[in-house]
Image 1 (tube, helix red, strand yellow):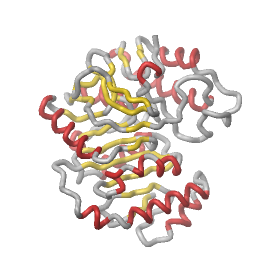
Image 2 (tube, rainbow, N blue to C red):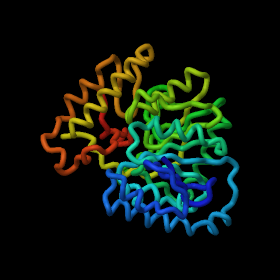
Image 3 (cartoon, rainbow, N blue to C red):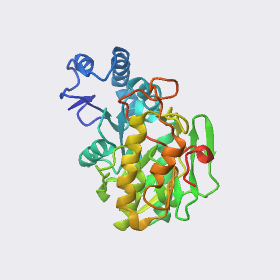
Length: 328
């Protein structure tokens, strides 16, 4: 299921049907992966070859106080290369990065990496459509250290979400629009957006496998708080270039998956309602479904402009500020 690029302990892991190591003919295995186009295969191969030449640069980088590992679920290799894998801190090969293609859920990828991340202090979940600006890792680690000095038992950290009073908090460039909420950072969080979430590995917190691609970050925050851990939003701006619609026609597969996850989430945390996420205010079970049905008409042709292709893993992100979906 895995091939590693570089030395066994280093950096790039791509999840595919067979196990390969550097030097094997990984191209033929990529081509055999039916969900990848020829262009996507070539894009991944090109990036892998480029990143194999980064070892010398990595050895010259300063050692950071805390170690990070990254995990991403990918459904679009071209977008992955154009956004996340252009991030300097990942191109530098300073950190392990695990890439899961077409995973059935966020939990499948994250939980497997949590089992394998004993050498890292924090496991960072990030979307494929995120770009981490130069120096982001240093900024994040500094913000993390500040948050840990102020918030005891900190185990879950994000860059955007809701504070304990249900107010938006965070600092993100979302689709070219800078969002910098007035709430001072760091602050304790009651909910986090899924765009980027880091978990302290010794907390052994994992994602709920019953949730596929929605609500899993807020579920993680609630589960952490239930176990005596804290969650926080920190100031470490990243760029989010989502092409998921914030309103208007969407594919039925998308709304069905969102509503199914909402039902699981609302039932699981019934006794914590009402609660606010960056996408929805949920007062009672069914609120998300009612809002989606009222505001996201199902498209008759999923190939029309603005809609994700069938079979792609999608999620709603609430980093759109006042333009994000919000249950009144």
